[in-house]
Length: 382
Ligand SMILES: *[C@@H]1O[C@H](CO)[C@@H](O)[C@H](O)[C@H]1NC(C)=O
Ligand SMILES: *[C@@H]1O[C@H](CO)[C@@H](O)[C@H](O)[C@H]1NC(C)=O
Ligand SMILES: *[C@@H]1O[C@H](CO)[C@@H](O)[C@H](O)[C@H]1NC(C)=O
Ligand SMILES: *[C@@H]1O[C@H](CO)[C@@H](O)[C@H](O)[C@H]1NC(C)=O
Ligand SMILES: *[C@@H]1O[C@H](CO)[C@@H](O)[C@H](O)[C@H]1NC(C)=O
Image (tube, rainbow, N blue to C red):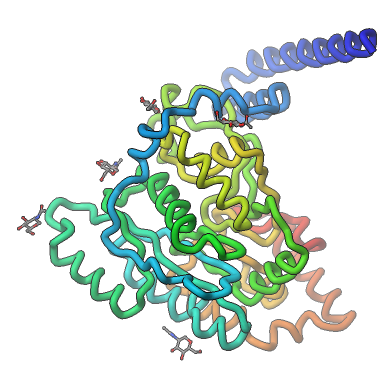
């Protein structure tokens, strides 16, 4: 036993030393190369060597009273009874800026139409929009624009708004708003989804997928486009710049792209509890989600048909499988019509249809393109 342990330790040491050596060689040779490459190499090596992020958890843990300051903003708009007494399969939180009324209307009349989903898919899905308060001083909580929001909310009953400034750098506060709202208002929903307001969700495909998971009683579930070992960006002019004071390590815990991901209700509950003791000042919300999940031992899994930054190619053979696609604003109505058309299922049915679609998907996904859309392997696997 002792000998064995010693051998393992020795082995680990050798692994560590070679990795260090390799790393230093790489670092020295690549000094003049693109810093992006270096930071990724650093990040992957870091992840491979350390492969445990418990020290992040430890160093970001703060007293509860202090953690509360990130979430105790008062509600400006709320719907405490949105889920009451209903068997909710999925609660979708769409992150939206107050002024994006048109995007919200587009979602309400396409993939986020609760009535349509209930009537055609036979399940209850709730879609709400998470908002902060308005971004200019003139448009305060009693201003004209807020009145328009109140009016919009009276019409649709789906805005959840808290009194913090809605900005890119406050997205983590919005994440906390979501988890706290879920916990107190809709904890019995079986799945939760977070999505951007320019994401297209293929609701029939997603519902079928979640129903199957639900029937198997899946837990510990977190799915989306996973970023593995992503490095913090240290370039000051980047939108995603993170200082060493904010995050000192060279790699983030794995997380899913914020454009759209789904978790099961047990995970939502665990994340909620993690937010009660973590310092939420890191403002990249999907990274913070990764930090919370890491603190409660939940890891994300990839689904090939959840998109990252890119738009999915327009084709029935893609629609047949797609879950989410990012960057749709003007085309959302057209895409919804096309993607839910009965013809989509026909084009891929039978042996010929399957072969045809495999060929089309290979062509669309495996030829080099610069958009971050579905990976090549999605052409062959689900
Ligand atoms: C939602 O769908 C229902 C039923 O299909 C339809 O009557 C209603 O007009 C739709 N709502 C919007 C906002 O498009
Ligand atoms: C909000 O703005 C209006 C003018 O647009 C101003 O009269 C009012 O005092 C402001 N209220 C607050 C709470 O700042
Ligand atoms: C975040 O919201 C708070 C509360 O409204 C505000 O004081 C702060 O300036 C906002 N931060 C950013 C970066 O917008
Ligand atoms: C949270 O982290 C920030 C740095 O990102 C730090 O300035 C702040 O003091 C921390 N908050 C607490 C309560 O420790
Ligand atoms: C993270 O920290 C909390 C509180 O300090 C602790 O309960 C939890 O077990 C930690 N998680 C991991 C994965 O170390």
